[in-house]
Image 1 (cartoon, one colour):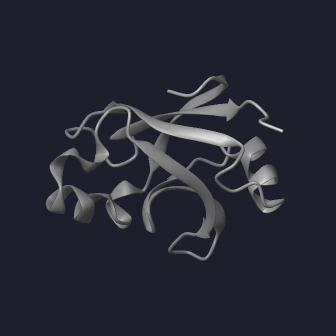
Image 2 (image 1 turned 60 degrees about the horizontal axis):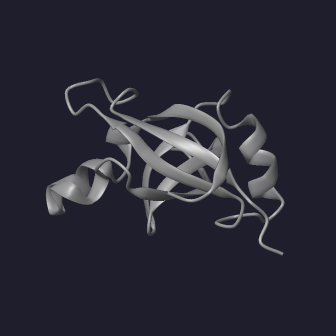
Image 3 (image 1 turned 180 degrees about the horizontal axis):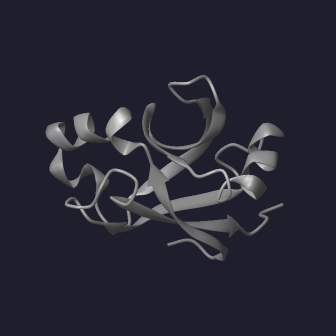
Length: 112
């Protein structure tokens, strides 16, 4: 884990509607505890722009509107993959799609 400041722990929403199930069928350990994900902006199936957690180019899920308020501003300003660290902190494969994965988001220390 990096040395950063804790920002939030939140659930990923809509994981069944994107690439999480496909990734799990290909490689069971791909979405395990501690796995690092990237935060980015993307549109959901309804065309609404939001903060997504990705593994490579694959969308795992969206952050809720409340959880993404602060993060959205920085991602829109171009701070993709340089300001936040996002890691899977909880996996419950039996939970519904909006409570299956929880992530911890940290703000990385400036390395200027």
